[in-house]
Amino acid sequence: MLDSNITHNNYKATFFGLEKVLSTSLSDALTRCNCLIFNQNQDLDRDRARPDIVFCSPSPEVLKPVLQRFKHTPVVVVSRLPEVDGWLDALEAGAADYCAAPFEPTQLRWLLDTHARARKALAAA
Image 1 (cartoon, rainbow, N blue to C red):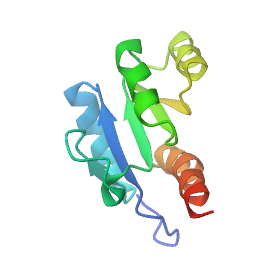
Image 2: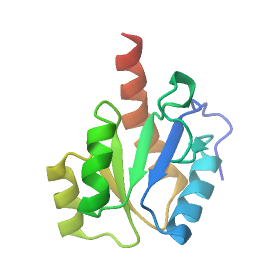
Image 3: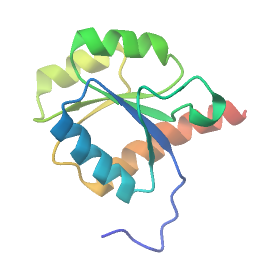
Image 4: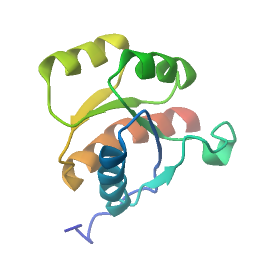
């Protein structure tokens, strides 16, 4: 249950290379955190559609081009299961963080507030 006494920014997120079940579960949880989800096929280069955070597969074939495309946007690697090796590999490759299902609103709010807020602050400076 969301705490109505806490205000959250409307962050914008997009997904790359996530399995459908994982994507649906993450999307549902992020929506409960007042996060807007953009389809990866939308024009993400426009200012109003530019994501504040990107969630992607840990696959190097997905992660590497996402990190190149979104150099100034935090990229969080998403997995079905928490795996130490996958987490370390993702961080070493340049990901901002790693999260695994099941997605808890508290965990996702922390990711959004930590990574997306920092990006917004840099953009405003």
